[in-house]
Length: 351
Ligand code: TYM
Image (cartoon, rainbow, N blue to C red):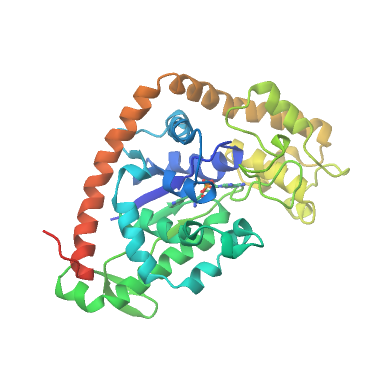
């Protein structure tokens, strides 16, 4: 049966890209799917091992989930490190995946930079842990921004190789479910997950450079709208956003070759819940001096209540911890079943 899984790293500066590319989608999917939303604190260690405020960052992501409208009673919200299955399954997947697959990941190449030999092994194995996150719950649908597409393809490759390598054992133990793999019908254990990457804001760009994505780690705070920014800050950042000198085009094709205009229209559309074409029907032909205040007003209208609610929730860290603990218990139940199956399939001695 369909199950949604997604995760966000507690690495600070949760921004508009995370909100529009991911969290908003999570909120929508709740109505139609069983969902698991995870604060991936183990992943955060790959960027920087020693961190002063990992705990408060973890609580902040959880607060953002709840403030945005995710219901932690109906669905599962927890932090990754509480459920040992993530690290256990990632180990198995480290033995399934090939080093060459990891070396090809563009995010690894970007993050490792020139001195690749000196990057942590965790950074290289990052996508293996990510595949484990999803497949530990046999997640079938994964809402993410465009930057995670390659990682999700790798998760499919890992699932497919596991299913193939262990097909005899999966069959003999009667743990498989019929699934289509390429041209063949096989009995697989892990589903091939579908990425959900749709809408006008799958790749929100920096407000200062239309060729760079909006990112938590950009040194310029003006490049992004943080979920903790107040109304004045949001308006100021939009006012200062880079643009070209032309007015907005009259149709969506006119955005081609105008990355900054394209980005702001995409943000406007996503905040309004319409397509870019509809946004242009609404705002096309206007000067940026008119469009920017309209965009700022809309951004404040949408983000203001989320920010305020997040701040309220952050005021009671003990309650957040209770939510995460309860979510962790529920997650662990599902994870435990998977790990028992996986151990039998792989042939590890267990009870
Ligand atoms: P992370 O923490 O970098 O980002 C969280 C989510 O926000 C999306 N995103 C964006 N979307 C649109 N425009 C942007 N500028 C932008 N920047 C970020 C990301 O695509 C993501 O959906 N590896 C993941 C976390 C992860 C995960 C998982 C996700 C770990 N395990 C399992 C899904 C399933 C990451 O670093 O996301």
